[in-house]
Length: 108
Image 1 (tube, rainbow, N blue to C red):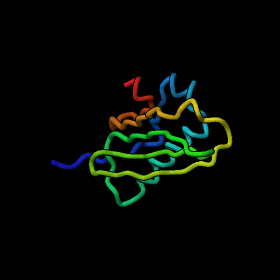
Image 2: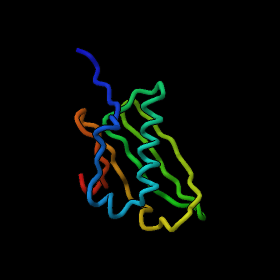
Image 3: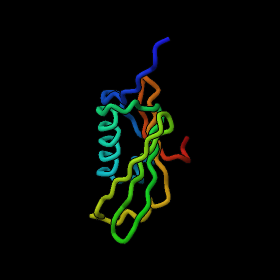
Image 4: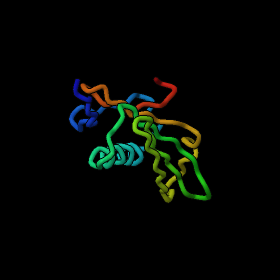
């Protein structure tokens, strides 16, 4: 049995209404980019990519993780606007082979 390769295909990317309304476009693009860098690396990708948001001083901290294989990376973004409304929230990007969907964890 061959191992499934999750590529997060750029042609079939979607987002929920909640993401569209509540997550700034520049952060949507940044999260897709983070997944793209992981796919392009030598690290195998899990179907579920998780992003947690925190803030320290005026820096947004995005923790990108997956379960299998274990992967965790923190990204720090100097805040150009007020992202306080997303602090403490979680975004999932899920690859079901046919589609890739970005959604808030409470929309799952």
